[in-house]
Length: 168
Length: 168
DNA sequence: TTAAACTTTCAATAAATATTGAAAGTTTAG
DNA sequence: CTAAACTTTCAATATTTATTGAAAGTTTAA
Figure 1: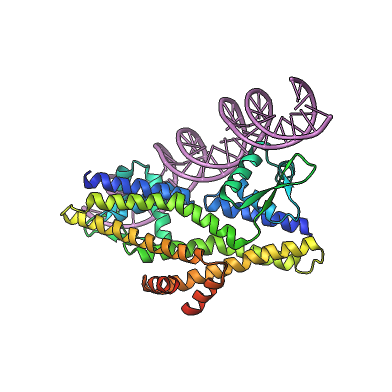
Figure 2: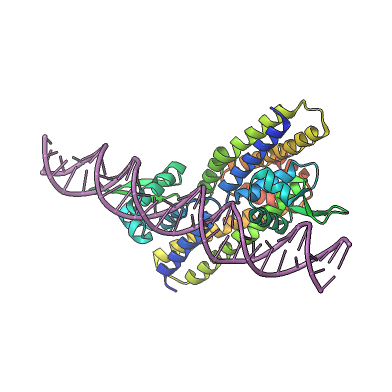
């Protein structure tokens, strides 16, 4: 199998994984393409490599820029915009995780908090049980969230390894 | 706000969160409904509470049973099947995490391994760079996967707290 | 048996989500 | 300026994914 085919396999796999986890397939594929490109890539090259439209390419790029996991790259004497991926996996994994936590988990945790306040004073067995269920989930989520913050606040993976040693 | 309304809010929130993370909305809502129900719930009651069809209710229930995060409950003298949720959040969170890891992450890790083998011997700069990119992701994924295994292998959250203390 | 009670299946349909592509907008070189 | 080069937007369309509901299948009580 030649390198080009391997790269394509990587892009496809990455796209499928994204889909399964609620990340748009094109967005994941564009990131994958940039990850395996040695040179900065233009919108037109992306369109051709992934056979997607200009609109799709543009929107995917904007989302990745918004995530902060790809960068614009100016090539002197060329008016086109070029893009490169953040290659440090630790950096982009942290960014994606934090952003999703912020955008998707945090609002849910807030609802859980609200629900606890709303039902705190209910004295029925049913009400108490509901409070407990919500509280359990809230506490659990907060613990995981804190753990994620701590792990990701540390630089690179040394901490991860340290943790592994402790746990094993 | 009354308890019923709070429960509904919980169910809706849970459904949205599920959608964002690639879990079918109905499936998430059925779990939420069972989580906030004091008594075992029948298919007909689920259909009515969530205004979903029999087919949808049945499929959602099967998936949750398959996940192992809800149980069938026989009520003596009644031919209907009733269902209850696993209320221990630690247990069901672990099951979902492990299942998704197994079904979605593991195959990707295998592709990464394959890609490494396929490109190991390529001597070009481009080939070496691709190998490194894939290897980085593979190694990172394996570390996270191991950490997750270790955390989830421990009972309940004590370990989580222990880790937090070490890290803080 | 058998018929009522209940569960499962799955083709048809609806709903949600992603993608296109052409028009509008913007920037820059001359 | 202004026209070419490039980027962005977004209504229309296509694709994917979820849901329905009625028919088929299964179980059980009598």
